Length: 155
Length: 91
Image 1 (cartoon, each protein chain N blue to C red):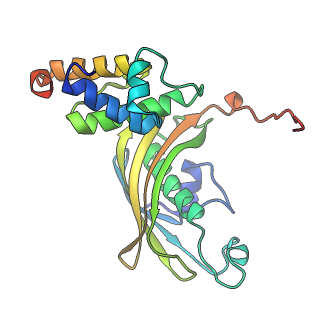
Image 2 (cartoon, rainbow over the protein chains, first blue to last red):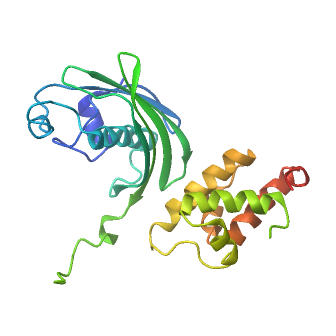
């Protein structure tokens, strides 16, 4: 088991953008099971939506990506310590809405892992029922190589 | 237009992942597959992972950078199949 505090030592994500509470099982580089308790206090519920609190699908994809990243990084946490991690491709299917009070169980397996990138596939379950299925491709990138400057060009 | 089944199957896989038509890809099979600098490796990784599953081969990490053109992808798959003694059956 890996606690919330230990998770913050393995991936760079922090509140309000860390969506994994606990790692239940881990086989580094191969498979992982993680937990996320969804509460009514999540910062996104007032806006998604004001009269009907539904967890955004994009946030569930991010949660799955963070589980995949934990799977990728757990075996060699020193490697890529100075990197950021970018999604390259997402293939997802949303099956059921997720609401406050739900407990998300993420089950991910590695499809292909190399030293700088990975393809992972997984499912999020609530009460044993799949709510999201996704395949994600992500890579470790040097933040110095990412262009964050934009020249404003009026159209 | 294809000389064998490996050429056809690899073209299908690369077309789906790179979101190009098979005809266009085949015509430009010696051209560089990816234009977006930096995304090359991830698309190449997806292509290799799909081909590995399809042909039950294992491509070494250092060979993924070789997948720059469709011709190179076909050659790599054939090389891996040949090493495993599975090329004749795949053709």
